[in-house]
Length: 317
Image 1 (tube, helix red, strand yellow):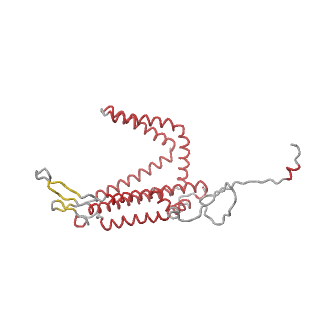
Image 2 (cartoon, rainbow, N blue to C red):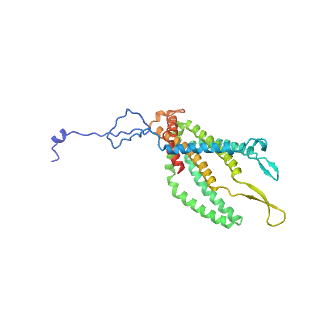
Image 3 (cartoon, rainbow, N blue to C red):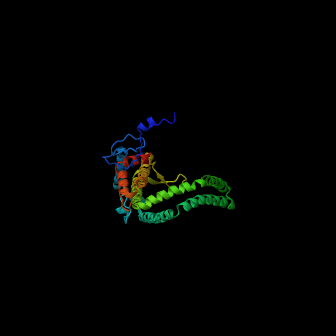
């Protein structure tokens, strides 16, 4: 029964070959193959365009509010501003120059610090993970010690609870640090091979700073318009006065805060999507890597065109 090989020698043998295609390959000449291991390419089309239009309308609305109600932060006098305030008949100047300059200086310092930390991350990813984990444990222990030493027992108890939780968490995940280090090294290798994606993150960070300034000036202007504060005599009868303001429209301010966080989330997720696309392209087609590589430009174009609506949708959620 086991020695009869005449039939088995004449029988056809089926050979299966695993084919894996890059999900970023949108070429039209690739034929369709019935293979369970084949990664099918997605059709090139704009997804969730309604939410992209919603973001554009949101930005346009804030720009319109700024043009209509916003103040000029660099105005020298109150007369040059659109919304001067009066206090006992005197013009009060609203000078936002210091706020603008301090915000720009803080953003520049944060950009330099993030660039330094990125270089440190690429050099010692494994050590950095352990240091960050132990730093949280030490910080919670110091907070508990400071609370008990200063007599603030509530702070000491809360710090002790967080210290115990951090110790348990560190003990639980310590054996997983090598796996996290391997993933981090892989990501660093992809970024190092396509380092121009870092400049994209700085561009979106600059856009986020500009959006924060624009939104703040627009809200300051509309606040002066919606809220009317007047001086009224105090009820004590001692001749003093109190400032009474009309109730603001909380619905409008709620929508303004939704607008602020919505746009910021879109900018953050655009960076996340660009980096994810670059890492994916580097993983499947490492030969396309480089400083100004097709992987970076392709990921950026996909993020800002076909995937932009989905990015806006996820950001709104």
